[in-house]
Structure formats: structure tokens, C-alpha cells
Length: 259
Image (tube, helix red, strand yellow):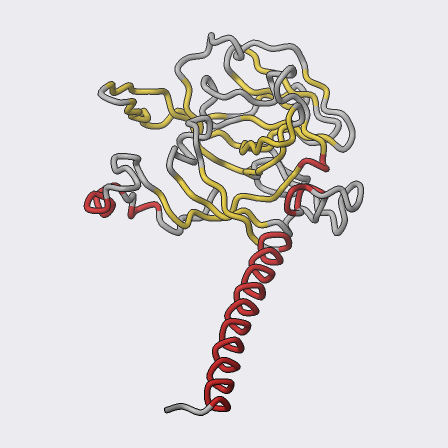
């Protein structure tokens, strides 16, 4: 029969083990919060506005340090300070996550095409920056599948201008045609400390061209720069269909850098 002292020691060890487990969990949560705040945060793609660069079902990491930090870098967007600290401005061509100006509870992901002071306009489906046409080159059609429907969309390589002496930034865009509702616009004058962003799926993107919803993006609203994919699924398997998971993963997209 065990003595009372032996039982006391056993209870002490058990309580000590529980305390150590709780402490380990707290440390893990704190480390995760720090990493999420200052380094990388995961996001997923729920819509097709950035096709062909990003597909529905892509999961990516966004670097929080690329543009410095604002209140939207913090968990729950805590208003601990104003503006940005350690700020680095984005460049044209960067794919960024930002808080929607009209509803900061919503995250958007688009491509920066306009910098502070730029004049942006769409004319007959072509992008103009500061009254200069942005070159685009037609390449093979993009085959888009939506359920049982297959559509061939026009695909281009668009080359955005960057700073003096820097080469342009080339990326792919897709279009249905050049006469859509956002293919002929007024001139957008980007205010100081704001940015203008558009989706690569130009005829299926609610972006800065829609002033009532997105409009100009305040620098404070930038969350970070999209860096690389860490997972991608085509959506053919539900979360409970474990046996179908291996066939739903887009293996060719895993760990792809985002351009």
C-alpha cells in the first residue's frame, strides 16, 4: 500500500506535468502570434479575380515586413498606433493583401498598378498610366473551366513601368474582350499615400476601378506582399473526403513564388 508521501509526490508530478503542458501551449501561441504579426501570415484565395496568377483554392504566405507595419498588421487590427512604422512603399506589379477601404474587416488581394500621384485610365480595354499605354502582348489563350463549362479567354503578357533605369515588370492577365463595363473609364488620380490596384482577371475583378467599393487604397491598409504558395486544391474533395484529398491537390503549384 502506497504511503501518503508517495501519493503527494505523484500528485505533485501530475500537477507539474499539466502546468508544463499549459505553459508550452501558451508559449506556442505567443510565438505564432509574433510570427503572424511581424513575419508571415497565411491567406487563401476564395475568388477568381486574380486568375491566372492565383487560383481559387490557393493558400499563400504574405510577408508582413515588406511594407512595414500598421495597425492592420496586428491581431484584430488593434489601434495601438497610427500610420506605418518601418515603412517601405510597394512597387508597381506587386501582388498585395490589403484591408478593403470601405470595410476593413475584409481582406482583398490585387496587383498594384498605380502609385501616389499616378493618373490611371482604361481605354478600350488597355491600361494607361500617366497617359502612356502599358504594353501588352497576346499569348496563347487561357482555358478557363467553370463546372462543366470550358471557355477560352484572351491572355496577355502585360509589362508595367517601374522606376527610372529599372526594367518593366511583366505578368500575365486574362480578358474576355475589350468592351466590358470597366474597359473604358475616367481618369483616376491617385491621391498621396494611396495606391491603385487591379485584378489580373481584368473583366472579372472588383478593384480600384470601382470607387464605391474599393477605390484608392490608403497606405495604412496594406497588410503585406504575397510571396509564395504553400498549398493548393482544386476543390474537388470536401474536407471529410479524406480518400480524395491526394487527387484534389495541385502539386505543380506547391511552393510556387508569386509574380
